Image (tube, rainbow, N blue to C red; front, side):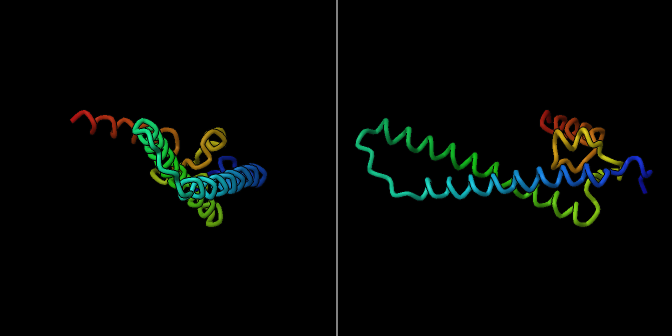
Amino acid sequence: MLPEDEYLSNEELTNLQGGLEEQLKSLMSQSREAVSRLTEVRETDADPLDLAVTESNRDFSLRLADRERRLVAKIRRSLDRMQNGEYGTCESCGAAITYGRLVARPVASQCIDCKTEAEQMEGRKRLF
């Protein structure tokens, strides 16, 4: 159990929750617009270069949409953790995640020490 002063205050939690909900709303709106653009009937490009640019732009849009989809999942998970009283606690070691870290990265689920260690381990795996 964390000491009382390491828990997020109700005001801090409310601020973070409001930011996450606003970000989720914005991403969902952008996703709907992107899907609409991607599913529009395209005119046939007469020029092969135009076709290549169109396909490249479509591929980029799909990659961006996938990143946004993953972010939406992280936001929803963070909001669920708030509801369950788990938000702001490191999933790896159980320590408090600082308010400053959560302001910078509201979907953070690990304290800075555990995240740094995980990134270093991931970097070592890529070397081999």
